[in-house]
Amino acid sequence: MQTVRTSEELTEALAETIRQSVALVPTMGALHAGHLALIAEAKRRADKVVASLFVNPTQFNDKADLERYPRNEADDARKLRDAGCDLLWAPSVEHIYPQNFATTIRVAGVSERWEGEHRPGHFDGVATVVAKLLLSVLPDVALFGEKDFQQLAVIRRMAVDLNLPMEIVGVATVRENDGLAMSSRNALLSPKERAKAPSLFQQLSELAEAISGGSSADSATKSATDNLLRYGFGPVDYVAYVDGQTLEPIGKYREGGRVIAAAFLGNVRLIDNVAVK
Ligand code: PAF
Image 1 (cartoon, rainbow, N blue to C red):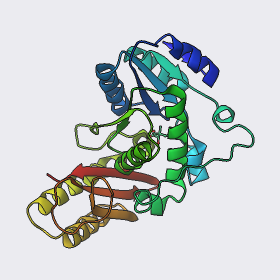
Image 2: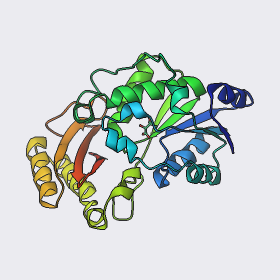
Image 3: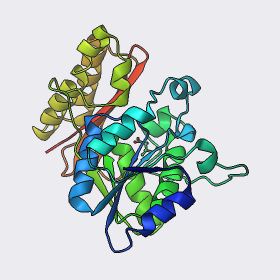
Image 4: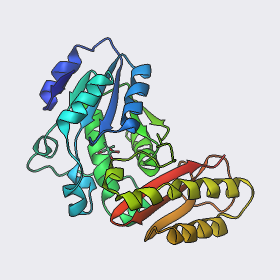
């Protein structure tokens, strides 16, 4: 697997794939089985797989969170190579955001509630960097995990609005045996917090079942929130039942809805979501 750092090297490396299809898997590193599932799906969908590794400072609204974000490029490169990735693009911050960089992409509506409310500016940072990554690689398909469900909806909206010429694919969340969604942040949980963490998925699964069984979203989300607080989570930023495309809240079962949640365990903020079938 070749590693490139600048857009010029990237374009040169991609020139060889002129008659081949290309898939892009954007990452911030600290790779786990969830990322490797994206690489596996990318390999099924395209001839060549490019992964980007860039810890994007503009999507962190909390400086301490950016500083403690796990970084290990050598380890990540080895995992990508073993998974069959063809090209790693690992640009520097200065390369992505050179002096005088002045453009921000803001996706109105779908980015505003939930994560948007609790992490001001986060989705502007995500949309801007993802647009740069997509336009630099110009893949046929780009793959994102469903764990960051609102992020996926924001990227889909942006790709449609800007006529970005690639397919955006969401890949199902990969979970630990006890149900906890794989996340680079799980490594920051203490053993006690790690033992409590699967309750988030359990509560969301029960909430999804209650709503598909006819319960009102209001009362069911309230009891899921109370349960999370009782199990040691807190603060609970939100638990909600939303439309899967617009992320607007809905009150009763509707096809394509999703339950979503974000809550702290100690200093670690966990998010998760479950489809309501
Ligand atoms: O989901 C992530 O890892 C990041 O938000 C992304 C999509 C790579 C943009 O920095």
